[in-house]
Length: 330
Image 1 (tube, rainbow, N blue to C red):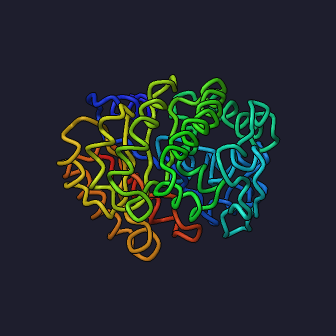
Image 2: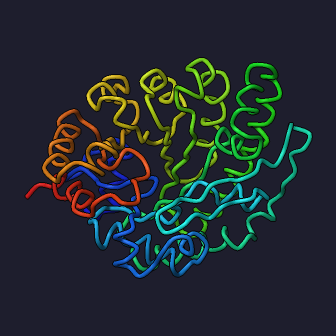
């Protein structure tokens, strides 16, 4: 089986000859930038530089997928948010909220013509042509995360309590941004789409996930034409059962949820990806530490193995490479 076939089989809960290895968010590091001669911040908006850096996950790390969206800001920037594009070892950030309430929301499909969006789409097309046997993953941000960007985290979270009806309207409206960007990436050649939505426990209670996001994530899973991977940071044990109701293809989870516990909670209803710890294992641990964590995840029954989230930009290369080495039979 090719890397692409292996990953897609496991996402569909089918048998494969081995575990797939990939990170549905970002595995880019400064070491990879130096090896591929492609650097932040230019690689966020330049298709050729983005392409060189994206292919490092396959060429250097030995993973089964390539994914060219390294930051959290592309669609928000394209719609109108101000962005600090960061530096060599600093990810981009939103610097100013855009709207105050639902009535301020204004966007249309023209955001897909933004230069940063067009760079992503061109990069996906190049990756698909170069690596037809490797999984090409796209990435979009869900409307919960987009709401943080457009309204500010604190103001949006206050609305979930004081104006829940408005929040539902906001999420429904912003879902179009997520869907349109996903559709464009699929058309460009993406085999799967990661939906990253930062509905972690400290920002979104399990009841809030149930009431606000099950309908939204279900809609995204239904309308995106390729398999979807939902990524949520933090301890998500209290919402895995809810996530299984959305019909997303897979869930990418962090080490704050024990691998065996995640498998137990999922009950075979959804494929699981993760959950190798970033700070203690990948950033500051040894390759031997990584191999032990990979072995544990495999023994627990995690379907696809990879870092728990976007990796720290100074993560040692050997630790990231060890994930693929340890996950594959000798």
